Length: 128
Image (cartoon, rainbow, N blue to C red; front, top):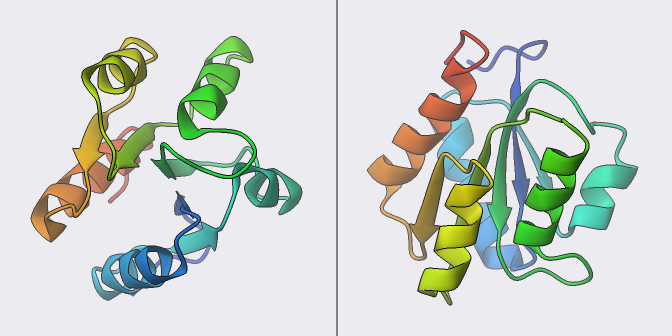
């Protein structure tokens, strides 16, 4: 069962089906999940910034995932970031990793790979 006061997995993906599936997968593994369709929705939620791990799609309406990751880095916000993309390219992956991403995952992401990356992110807060 998820610790409702512990760090969360903040899932930002504009594809409803992907967001619902990943939310269900993460919850089934006991993670607390807050899911959003855009960076703007995440920022407006009042959850930002908070302890946890950010699972972020690269291509999003409005602000891209990599642009948001760069913004976090510029502001000194140390929220662990995992980026995902179904349209990956070497330049995007390289930029994400330069900015400190824990992982750059290619959709469809194998569940074990996703869970391992999330555990790595949450471990930065001393929790799983």
